[in-house]
Image (tube, rainbow, N blue to C red; front, side, top):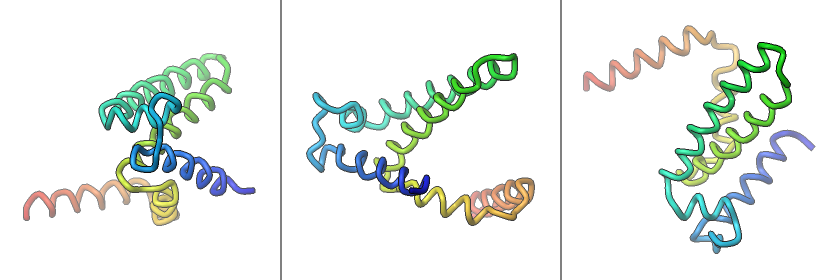
Length: 122
């Protein structure tokens, strides 16, 4: 079993919880977030991102590193809900990471900025 398999299984569960797929907001946390709409799951992503930062700072000061792992898992989970809502999957993110593999982060950032300038000038 690979991590891609785990992500694919979780994605399938999230997809099955969508309102159009019969997800019941009374019985499922994911269905409830999707039913409430983007503001609900985007707020959770913001909260989880903050908790990742706090857990990382704690880990830097001798705190429990497992808490960082737990918070990143929460962030990934809620991010996967957003991906599903907008019609994307974890595989889309993996493909993007693979596209960036071997490319300097500085070069990638410069390329994105150049594309944004071109798009803004059009």
